[in-house]
Image (cartoon, rainbow, N blue to C red; front, top):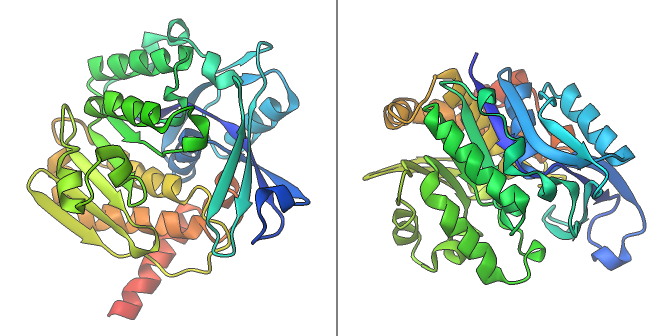
Length: 328
């Protein structure tokens, strides 16, 4: 079976036990496993495809907890290295009444940023595999260069590259540095997932269609534009497919975008997608793929946290069927 590899941060999300408070006013938090690349790997594994995480964690209790949680989700953890040089990353999350979030990160540096390119084994990747990454670990660090090597090695095997910028400005000294890193890596991806909140920041263009078309540079073949509860749009060169979201009782939006792209990539792995057939598969199966991705993202907001709130495949399919009955 082909495999999804996610590279980047795995960390602890501390979720407040009450909504509507500023982070400084939160009294108690609940620990949850997180980190966008890890969330995506967990979604793919939970839906039934092989997934592995490439990162580094501290030799601490939080690192032990994260490895345990990833294994419980079905993610391969043998490519997660450990170090005493830095601690596992932490993120404190403040939830507004509508479930939206504010973040405060503790990682100067965290262990994941110390993962270096020499620690990537070329034999990890095989033909048909896929690599997914985000922007949080593209700050100047050994991990940034590890991303470059992983992308190069995956392309040598003919694998697909997926990029979700997942902008987190509090982690950058200057927003311009974040934007620059995203634009540096963007041409290396075959699939780009971008949210309505990120599009203008990354492209500098306020007109949505124009901004999205500007993303088709380098190897980019598909852009997935997510709009939260309103669904998503899939853009291929010269083609646009629209989809609607799913109504659920939102508790916490943490990880919803990761669950969306996890569901999206799971369906592509099922279809044996590769750079030479990606456009054909997306053109023919866009309804099925976007339905699954939207339902995956929606159901994750019903619980707290990201990995801990992921639905199973049967729940995703059931939500799709229920909405179809309403539409019929």
